[in-house]
Image 1 (cartoon, rainbow, N blue to C red):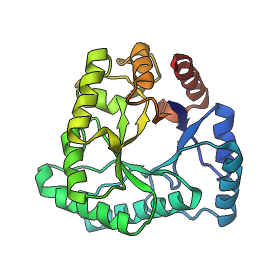
Image 2 (image 1 turned 180 degrees about the vertical axis):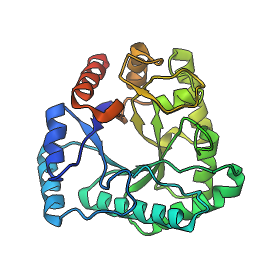
Image 3 (image 1 turned 90 degrees about the vertical axis):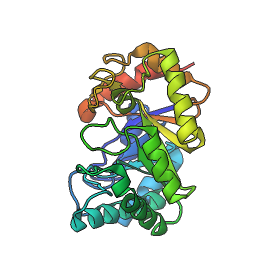
Image 4 (image 1 turned 60 degrees about the horizontal axis):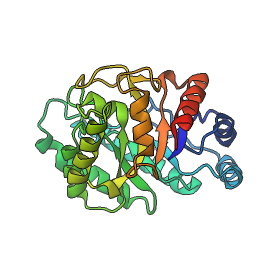
Length: 277
């Protein structure tokens, strides 16, 4: 498994490649827009070109863009819905420009409605984003299931995929989110059962990335709380099984340490690399 981390894109944008290299990343995830802001920001064309040039030498691959955290394709609020689509389209265009694999995003929240009441709106939003961009993947991420957040169960993500019917709609599996929503990745049997359920509902051919995060909260907690590798409820042995699993080992694995602290990212990457066979 290729291993990497979420890397800061603070200006200058092209310096992201050097940051990733110094950390020992073989792949990486980035923001191309401030995660807590609606309005997309322009990245200078010169910086985009320099980023690509530097990575032609560094060969950090794949690169995945993570959308802003405000996305909600199930929102009843016209501003939030349209702004979500606009932000995703901007990320997808930037993904195409830098040669990224795609844009990873959280679908949003039903805000008290039934999933069946919002799925058509979600599917329309995704189709709009895909139509406005030609090449990159749009990548659904599973959730931990807090409140009315969409996508804690594979069956829910599968319904969205079935509605959209696009080969460019893929999935990221976040280990901490999956654990929080009841998929017991901490045990060998639990890992096999999780992969079997993923194959049944979604298909492992749709899985393009893993977020390798330990969980600071127990199984079925329905809470999104990341922990450093080996210091949470999933545990070091489980990550050894995950990164070396025959059905997963050819995928990129991205760590998202609590607070994105460089020293902790480096330590987590070193642990995972030591577990890789």
